[in-house]
Length: 524
Image (cartoon, rainbow, N blue to C red; front, side, top):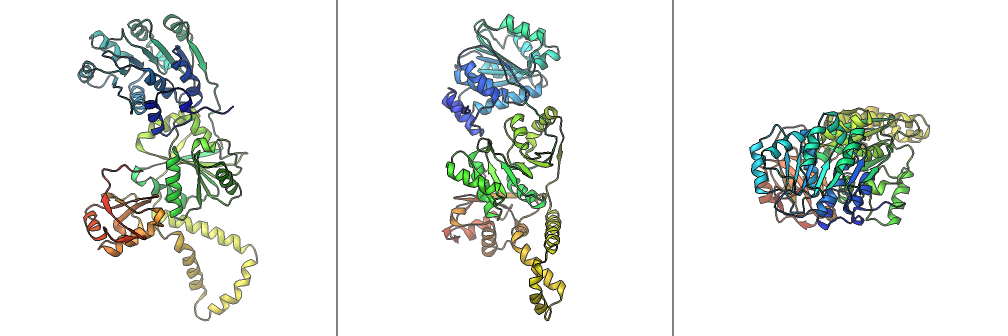
């Protein structure tokens, strides 16, 4: 049976815009089952493992139905401060195109600030039981008119001894509210609570546990800053001995941009997502299976059903929305008792999600430093040596003996070999010397350029253009991102004025170029 999309579930247009902006178009198992139940007005008990997208499962339908009024419309309870913050951030992302006002309340932060916010008016309160009760006692948080009550990670709240607090809070809510309870397990105490405080129309949805272990996959992660994500990926690709690589992006646009950038750098890469025709997807997959394509960049949806033997690496260019998707992604390598490698690019804010993955999968994700230029050269040197040894195991190379003998009249054998290596390395490493070390602490400014890959612009062309027309040297130029209609380049702070003065109006790759500071532009 074909999976439904979010757009088919009956969610409001503004909520769908928020979900799409987050990069999702297909619900996880718990989301697909719970959302219609909540939209139908039923109370819901959602039972699923941590990391399966439960927050979106209750927040999306709730936000689709919520009515803005003077009193609080919804209360979401979470067991810890950290989870309350995490849930509130997730709900805010989903609600970004609505006019819903949200407030997170928890211990350790100013209660006076929270009181002032409540008095100004909020629609949704996310909080820990202790702080919620404190605010109720002060009569600034009134729940007698709430339309929705959510208990998130209910079993954790039970383990932490919050049963009495929860009963106190529930007793202060309206009788006709819609209640949602989410938990990985369902202890007897919560069955009692559900009978006492939930309506007879409650529906219990249990998503079957799936294997969350991938024992034959070695997992690594690299901490990256957004301006250097692509450059970091290139360095990782150049130091890993990769054969067949599946790269995951969260959105179709990210797939297109990444494939464009990789192709400009000379990588053998193609993309696959839902907007491509079936014929193109089939042809791309055929090339990948036949090892005519090294890097396949895809969304989760497009990659479903792909069954590739001997996949050496899976790369998470963007992390997925839930742990189940992560396990499904990396499980595509390390099959048939063979070892596989999974690599994730992670920004500092996503470190908590990695810890959740380790906890659920009972595995270890080891951090690695971003490779330096020296690391890249050593790795390529090692790979090259292995290729030479492989060639020397056959006799095909002996047909070049007469040419070598002729060249020996002018050059010694070492010079001939070094010259051949230079020829082979020249294209492979052509861009590296143009790019500063990612680990440098120099300050950069990001520039926007009105020329892109559609103009046949490459990173090398862009760097050569700037160096030729200004007093700058190549080492003043950092990361270059070539997109379809425009590009971005990082340059040393203080050089942007000279670049604009000397380069604006000149033709770059056949088009009149304009350079401007990209501070007001969103990095893509």
